[in-house]
Amino acid sequence: EIPNQAVRAKAKMDARPPQQKGTTLSKTVSELISCPNNAWRLFQRDGVYYADGRRNRLGKHSLNTRNRSDAIRLVIELDGRAGRDEVRPSVDTGSASASVPVAIQAGWDRYIECRKIPIHLGGLKNSSIRKYRTHQKRFAAYCQNKRIECWSNVTRGVLEAYATSLDGKLAPVTVHDDLTMEISVSNWLIKEGWIPPTCCIDWKLQKPPGAEQYCYDRVEVKRMLQVARALKFNRWLFSTILLLGHTGMRVGEAQNLKWTDIDFTNEVLHVRDESFSKKMAA
Image (cartoon, rainbow, N blue to C red; front, side, top):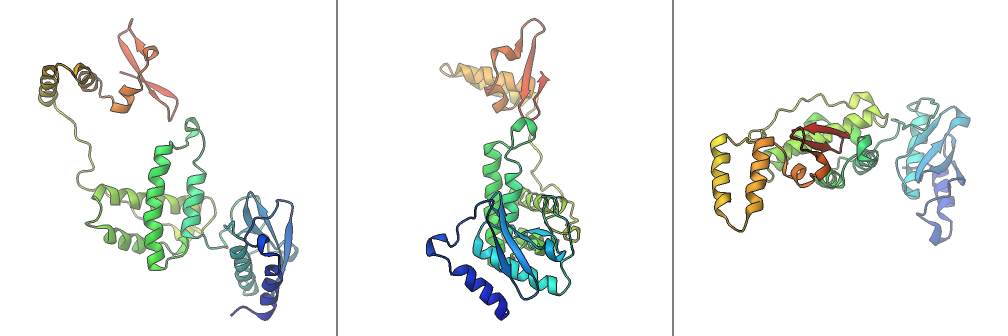
C-alpha cells in the first residue's frame, strides 16, 4: 500500500489536463515529487526519466522508462527503498543505475539501440537488427507469461525453462541462438551498470547437433557443375557454382563483387568485409 503522502503526490501530478498525461517533458522541465521519506526531482534526459535525489545525498538514478506514470511509480518505490537504506548514495556520470529494476523489454531496447551505429564502427545491419527483434519478442512473451518482469530475475534456471518450452517448436540451432542472445543482453546490462554483477549467468553453451556448416567435397562440386553446364539457359548458374567452389565465397559476397575488386594482373579477387572495412584476397 502506498503511503498517504505518496498518494497525494501522485494525485497532484495526475491533476494536470488530460492532454498532458503520459506525455514526455521538455528536457529543461522538472517536477518535484514529495514522497514519505524524501523529495525527488523528476526530469527527462533523451526521453528517459530520471529521479534526482542529490539534495538528500541519494544520487541521480535512471528510471529506465519514457512513460510518466511508470516513472512516478518507480520514484515512489525508489523512495521506499531509500527509507530502508537500500539505495546507496551515488554520483551520476550519465551512466545507468543498477538500483532500479530493468524491465525485460526495456533491457532489450537499450541493447539494440546501442548497436544502431555505422557498420564500420561495429554496428549491426538492418537484417541483424530484425533478427534480434525476433529473439526479443519471443523471450519477452515467455517472461510475460511467467510473470518475470525484470532482468535481475533472469537466471540460468529461467533460461533452461525457456529452452525447454521451445523444445520441439524450434530447431535446436534457433534455440541455441535465443539463449546466446539472452545471455549477451544480460552480460551487457551488467557491464553498463543497469543490473548488479550478481545477476551474471555463468553458462557456457555447447553447439547443438547440426550447427556445423556443411562443406561440399570435390566430387559433389564437380557433379553440380555438370548439371549446371547441361542447362543451356542458365549459364550464370555454372559460373556462380564455379566461383563459389573455387574461392569458398558466400553467395552474398559473390553478389556484391565489383569490377574494382578484381586484380587481373595478379589474378586475385578482393572480397570486401563491410563489417570491419577490410578486404580478403581469394
